[in-house]
Length: 357
Image (cartoon, rainbow, N blue to C red):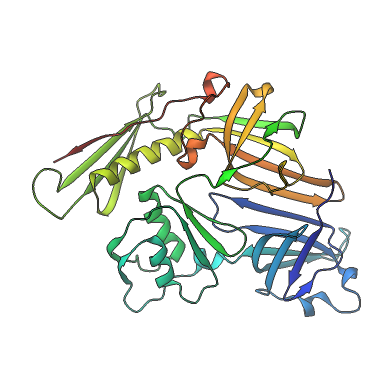
């Protein structure tokens, strides 16, 4: 597998002599991150600590494709027998969304959706919010004191069944469906030889109960709302109860119950192939929230899966990528149609029943 041409630009200057790089991207991780190793002697006569500083802006490219926009997080090194290497840790611009507390004169927004709330509370952050879903408008939203912007909108995203993640170019993606499909698929012996699996009952309740209230209106359905979604494959009786903050609707509690149950079912079914190279058959970097057909007879898999995360590596041993794949229901996509996998990889789509008092 051919090597990628890696270019890491720190404060406008390309890093010389990279010996290795690892980086990570995921649909359940708001910020991408990378670790770069550079020999001290590669910087020539200039001392690297006079050239590179914490929080310096960084852009990372693989054969011309930008995969991370952010800043220097850590500088670490060891002058011992390990080889006098400077290790540079890079984190995406999204980290300010995650770690920075909201400082707003009122802490309130009116008639805004999640994207609008994020923009209102983060006017100076270098992050662009891109929406790929129909979002709910909140008549009035008050922040939780001390919360970060990401924590604030992530709480709302769970209620709406949305994913939030970084696309590598300082964009926060808000979506409720897969972004696309990888070309060529995955097949044991063709583009991977080694893979692992996890089929787990952990965090998979037999029934998910979502309760909410609607303080507006009068009569049945205006006060207490409840939706129940059952796992059709459950063999044990254990329930999950979720209480929604703020006003809810029948449609809202039903959607949350079904989304949570689908997510639990999807995340309980995982495979982790070690793929040759960083790209699919069409040349796209392996990307979170993309569907891919996985054929792995060793584990009785022949169906669509969805990329939850990808961990990339390139060093003197070559180029590799470890994918984490879930059943597509983990990210609110329909169950795979026409799957030829064994029974443990298949499943039915839950349907929530709603009651109102």
